[in-house]
Amino acid sequence: MAVRESVAASTTMRPRRRWPTGVAYVGPALLILAVTSIYPTIYSMVMSLFNWDWGIRLDFVGFDNYVRYLTDPAFWRVLGQTFYFTAGAVSVEVVLGMSLAVIVNRLGFGMGIIRTLLMLPLMVSGIIVSLMWKILLDPTLGIVNYFLRVVHLPTSAWFGNAASAMPSIIMVDTWWQTAFVFIVISAGLKSLPIEPFEAAEVDGANSLQRFWYLTLPMLRSVLLTVLIFRTIDCLKVFAIIFGTTGGGPAQATESVQTLAYRTAFKFLFLSRSMTLMVIFSFIILAFVMIYLRVGERGDSQEAS
Image (cartoon, rainbow, N blue to C red; front, side, top):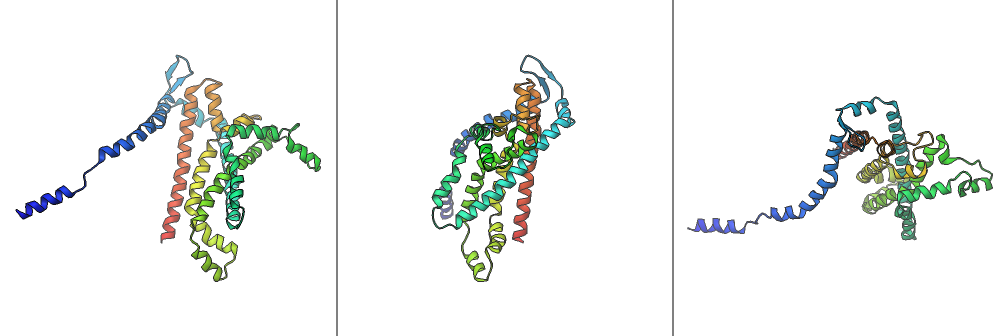
């Protein structure tokens, strides 16, 4: 009898499963994700197998659209230009953002004002940034060329020259998005413990040695997060290019996103545009997997 009572008491004291409540909390988020992300992705994959021109024409072509782009030199040229922009923008923004974060973190005064000023570009939308810099870098009426002429330096066509158009777009994106890198890395620097740095300083390590052997290893996860976000954002660049050059001159600044936009809304080949996005989505996924793999390998080496 005593055994039955103890068993019954332990049974009544067990916490009840509240899975219906958990589903009620998570369910709306999963539903929104399914409607806004999963369904459009599956729909794009299915429609990429057809030939649809925004009209009643809907012919099944299988993988012909994929073969068309994967064997088209123009597509690979546009993909290379997208990689060029991504490599240039991400590398400059990460180096500049980290340098600013380290410098501002060491200042003992005015850090709040400096952080606020550096964050101002992030408050402006991409299309506004592109139009603003298009005016500033105008070859004839732009204020940048005006100051260059005042100090007797050579001027540039900026967005109007095929050789300088993409570097100019990288410069604009650097001005716009370096603040994001600065904010994330600055928060990471604030979370680092002080004791290792004090011990290294006592042992005679200079500032560069403390940065290379302490700060960088401790910020590995933060840097990986920054690289993933900035790489994805730069790979899918659209507003900066659309607002400044539109992909020109002579398609020298065409990206995969602007090519997909023109294919769908200018040439009315909607299925081909979806094919471009499906191919590009797998490319972005591959980059993310590579970054995560490198991060896991670094963590395993550090643990060993």
